[in-house]
Structures are given as C-alpha cells and as structure tokens.
Length: 427
Image: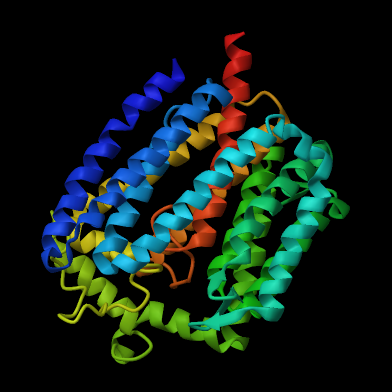
C-alpha cells in the first residue's frame, strides 16, 4: 500500500530531525531551553497528521513526494535555527500554513481537473499578482519581488507561478494539435505556422517585461522556462525551445545594456573579486564558505558563517544563500546529498507527468516539475557562480513564507494527479 511505503519513508526524516537538531542545539548550548525540542516534535507531529489525512483522502498518491518535501523542510528549518532561532519559529509557522493549504487543496479540489474550466481566471489572477508586485512592490537588493503587507512581506510571484502553470496546462492542452502542426522548415527544423507562434512571443514579451520592471533575471527565466518546457511536452517540437532560447538570450543581452541592476549582477558573476568588499561581497563570501566546507563539512553550527555576536557574515544567508551554509557545515557530501534529494523529487514529479493519462494532468505535472527544477537550478547555480545571482528561494529549504506555502500548494496538486493516475491503473 502506498501510504505504508510513505510511512516507512518518513523514518529517515525523523532520524535526521533528531540527530540534526541535537547537533545544532549543542553548538548553541548557551541558548538551549526546554522549548527548543518543540521544533522537532512539532515537525514530526505535523507531517504525521498530514500522512493520516492522505491515507483517507489520497490513498494511491505517490509515496515519496511528501517524505522528500519533509526532508527538505527539515534541513531548512535546522539551518535556519542555526542562523537565527526567531526566524526558525517564523518558518515553522509558515510550514504549518503550507501544510494547511495542502490539506485544503486536497479536500476541496478532489476533482482537480475542474481547474481546466477556470484556466483564464487562473491566468488573469496570476498576471495581476505580478502587476501588483511591480506597481506596489518593495525593492530589495535591486529586485522588486516583495509586497509589504502589515508587518510581513510576501512574494506574489510564488503564487503567480502556480496559477500561470495551471493556465498554461489548460491552454496548451486545447491548442496542442495546432501548435504541433508544421508548415515550413527553418534550417531543417520543422516550424509551426507563424500565427501559432503568438503564445511564444507573448510569453517572451511577458518575461522580458518582468526582467525590466522587476529587475530580476531569475524570475524572468523561471516563467519563460516553465512555458518552454510545457510547450515542448505538449508538442514534442524542438522548434519552440530553440526559438525560445534565442528570444530569451536576445532579451537578456538587451537588458544587460539598458538595466543597471542586470548589468551589475552579470559583471559580478563574471568576476566578483575586484569589488569583493562591496557589490561582489555576498558571492565572494559564498564561495569562501563553500570552499571552507571541504568534503564532510565543519559540522552543524560550527561554520564561520556567523560572527561571535551572532550576525551572519553573508547577508541574506537564511534565504538566497542557505545552500552556502549547507555546503560549509555539511560539506561536499551533504550539499551533493541535498542536490540528489532535489533530483529524486523532480524524477518522481516527471514520472507522475509521464504516467498521467490525460493531457491536462500531464502538462500540469510537467509544468510544476519544470518550475521546481528550474528554481532549484537558478538559486544553487547563482550561489556557486555558475550563473548570475538572483533572489529566488531554494524550494522548501530557504526561509520564506510565500515560497513555502506556494510549494505545498503545488505539491497538493501533484498528489491529486498521482492519486488519480495510480487509482485508474489499479482498477
């Protein structure tokens, strides 16, 4: 039974929580109190409750996705607690909100394919969220991604990502035959009719607008990458990713010459050392931290990432640069293990997409998986100087309420898709 396998898969997560939090608590012995153990107990209890709910609501859902999400969340909360216990408490609250959304989505969207009837509403709301971020958003580190509401900030783009993926799944499913029809060739590559290239040009324009107005190459790349991946899955035509790659490269090159923030980030990516104490400071310190970790790391709570007074050496260590903390304190072995966990998660998602028996489910799962994979690549590649640095969070790991809640919402959809597919195959 799938849920029994899921329960067994939770055992490594529980062991990690016990060993990991014990290590962090010992490293912060001067700050240990009786309530510290509540993090581990709360974490295990929350996921156990969700597991019991899934036994009733989605008995045939994939047995690996929730334990993998729990494992990534556990690693994130441990590292955030090591950096700042107050932030860990806030992250635990967002984790509860995310799990609450997961339960709500599964409870009220049992027939998730009804979303296909509301794809334009999802698309409009998704675009409006991005517009709100652009118009009323707060600019941090050059990127306009955050919206200040009361005493906390949210990233509308995280929710917009899921909503636009739903829209694209329904739209591409209905237009896939037209988009897959070739009427001419370009350098031997079959091409669709020019009038059917409209969605590609529109998404390129939207992504380029995000790049110019939000000053963030990562968000632009994420949305356009999701679209290209879903278009390729829908049509099986290489023409779309080829043309899309050319369009995005041209837009990024243009933005480099007209947007100071993009220009600065690209220059820092190419060579951060001449400005290592100012604009290149974060990236340089990230590279030092990753190098300091060696093969097996310095140990949880024993890295150089904090000053003696507790202030992080690397700004935004708990969000954009949490992978640097993992690489230092868990070493190459721990960082590689985390990347493998992300790869397994993506594999399970794409497996769900491949096994789905209807176009909407297949495209929705593929889009959610592509978004997760791209977001992971963009942020890890940025802190390792593989690509220009962006402000995107590491899914399930980085501190951030919007990302945590939106990712669990997407996970709920994936569980519903896999439950329907496995139930159909079993019957």
